[in-house]
Picture 1 (cartoon, rainbow, N blue to C red):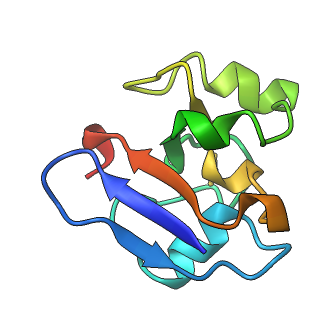
Picture 2 (picture 1 turned 90 degrees about the vertical axis):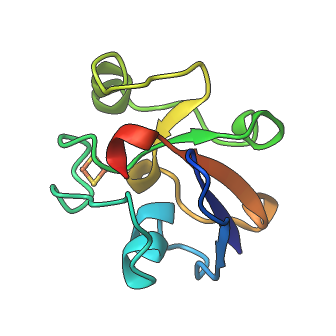
Length: 105
Ligand code: FES
């Protein structure tokens, strides 16, 4: 499971993300607004940017250099920003909560 919170007033959406899928793939499957994922998971478009809630952020492995570089230029970057396409679903991430930047909505 993963919970997406629109940064604006919209309701949170909870979805199932199969283990091994990325958070982005789960969001696309469920047509979550704000996760466009133009590049299909290549860590080059930045349209799958999410801000991970602090309690979950530390459970995610460190970003690859390509993700880290992109995260310096996406709009509304925060200290817990990640690319949803670079977060594979694992048992310890079950229930992860992320915020979708308002510029993507
Ligand atoms: Fe393009 Fe994640 S889908 S950076």
